[in-house]
Length: 131
Image 1 (cartoon, helix red, strand yellow):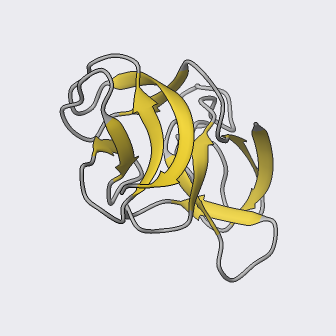
Image 2: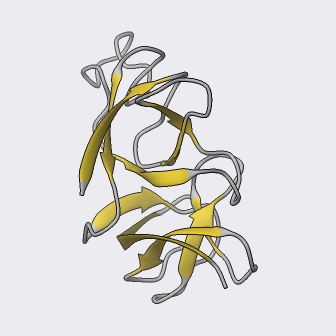
């Protein structure tokens, strides 16, 4: 399921996003594993990748954020730690995905391949609370 919501701050491409708790139809970049995670921001930046033009964001406050919600396959997201294929993934403090086995964490994706911190990893998007 793909979603489009309005940013309530800067959102970096390929990061986990959370539903805004203060504004309807809006989201922000996730910063913890227990927030109301809803999906993964799409990859492109909002401006052309030219020196002086690109700010590195997919969206800034008030702009549209394109989100891969539950049920999407082969979504690329930035890894925030070491990940093994099959790991259940949640958000770290920078909106990157990290493996989780912690009860109560929101699981936003399942890793389809291994990755290390700072690399991109392909995932299948899901949405459930880790048992």
